[in-house]
Length: 131
Length: 111
Image (cartoon, rainbow over all chains, first blue to last red; front, top):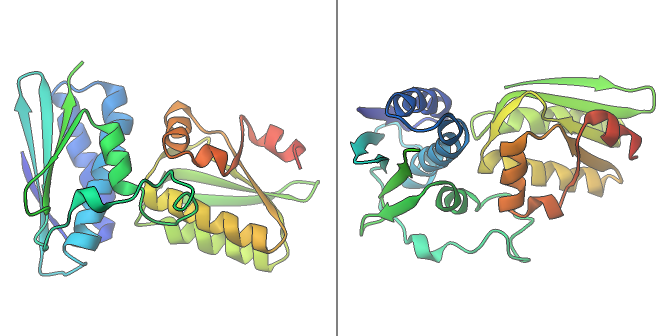
């Protein structure tokens, strides 16, 4: 399954619903879909739209869902310059805990079983294991 | 997402959040609360009993609203978090920043 999403935040919720239904059909548990996948994908999409494509209506975010063995992989790729995921500070630290932003990538890391980025930093792959 | 605002006889403003609190709608909640704050309300309970999930933008707006309420001399309590939402606050350590109660009734009595 592949989906191309316009760079507008209003599409995030419906896209997450669509992908969640597909992942349920792929065999992910209800809890993993209801919470882990929904929050992680919502974060990945919002980051791609806002920080990757910088809300440029001429750019899209591409999502691909693949069934690989006992896992479901969700790829999210934007058309931006990319970023270094190792440069994001821990949002739980004393300096960051009261910040309004900066928790998205942390939540993705915590909620999926595996997370990988491409070298450019404009594409991520979230892996969730089937129960 | 839809928010419902009500007041209790003890002067507590209950803000019920129905649906998902996410990047696309976070400002609706902020505007709702700031309007109440400007009207003089100071004690707030956010009831998440009917909330599906909250993303990092939603968490961020809660942090922002909490600061505004504190600066105005008020107080905020969160209530009705399900297991998933409770885990979200624990993961991010925001459970150390907010007063979290099991129910809105408990939260209301805590003021």
